[in-house]
Amino acid sequence: MLVLTRKVDEKIMIGDDITVVVVDIRGDQVKIGISAPRHIPVHREEVYKEILEENRRAALAGKEIPLEGLDDIIQSAKDE
Image (cartoon, rainbow, N blue to C red; front, side, top):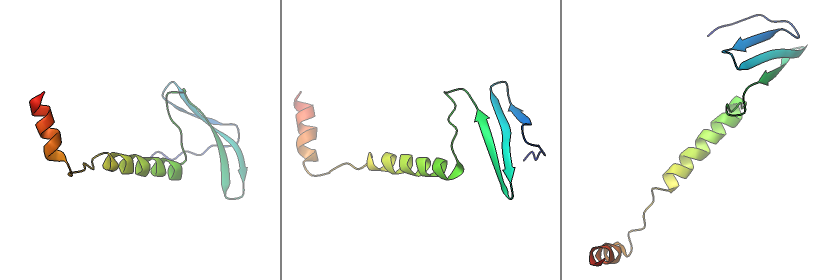
């Protein structure tokens, strides 16, 4: 992990397209601004983790296959 010291209005560049700027510092909180291309998603960590969990749940839900009537479906496919 790279650790940097920055003051208000100082920036950090990530590649050519992403800029992180220290907007304000109050006590133990630092307000930052992030400028990135629209195709690069930027989320707080807790939101990102929830998105990953929701995607995992959706992927697992799509794998549930009802077995009732499966023989009829297979036979119909064979008849076509």
